[in-house]
Amino acid sequence: FIAYAAHKSFPIYQMDVKTAFLNGPLKEEVYVAQPDGFVDPGHPEKVYRLRKALYELKQAPRAWYDKLLKFVISKGFTKGTIDPTLFTIRYGDDILLV
Image (cartoon, rainbow, N blue to C red):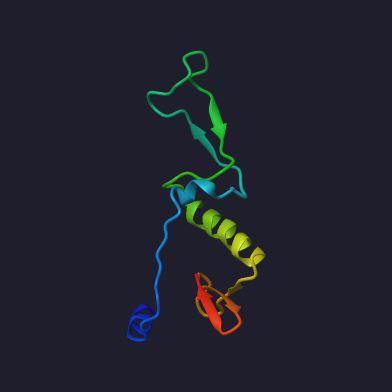
């Protein structure tokens, strides 16, 4: 896609969602122990249930994708049939790919 866009002199823009994986809500219950250096001295054995994903959690990429999918679909984009991570929307003669 990028090679074709460059060949046709189409404008290409790039973006990054900072801390993306921290925004995905979890569907299942995940519990974590207190990290070293942040242990509550009054409750050292306490564990916490996560509401949202953390980096290195195996569910994090899927949780983020599900949140992104819900957002872009609500804005009128269509999910790609061959590549489910490609979203498209048309405005008259223009097409936007995300």
